Image: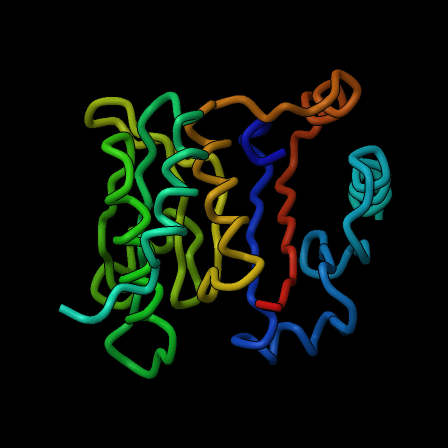
Length: 61
Length: 148
């Protein structure tokens, strides 16, 4: 998605190296995708359309 | 020279995957002279990976000494890797980053990201592309992973 849009940034975060950030977002299961610092999140490797829906929802808040 | 992190078997597997590489990719490494447990290993790993294909290059930066650049590429963690497109002298940031050492399962994420950025194609569905065209505000996706 980052490749497709100049507005989107995608960052893979190694959770154990950055425990503070992981704790703040309540990371328990991985992969967990956090959108805009907690505006939305998705747990697991979900289908593309599922992630799109969550981003759509997160942007409305 | 430290012992290699990637053995010959892995290197030949990666070389096979890298046959898919199309356009040049620049890996920007951000480390720190301060406390950074995994910086050295990450830099060495990145170096060994880019050495496998001439389409890949590596630049080394310091998050403090090169603070301006780190800000420009939104790097706030070390070790940090930016997987950017390179066309001649022109480096284009697609917003693809890795924070922390890409070892274990995440090593394949690094390889995948290199191939993806090299293709300059997201491979996403038409629906997703349409949705993304309408997005006019910043979206930060942080994917938390663990090495195993």
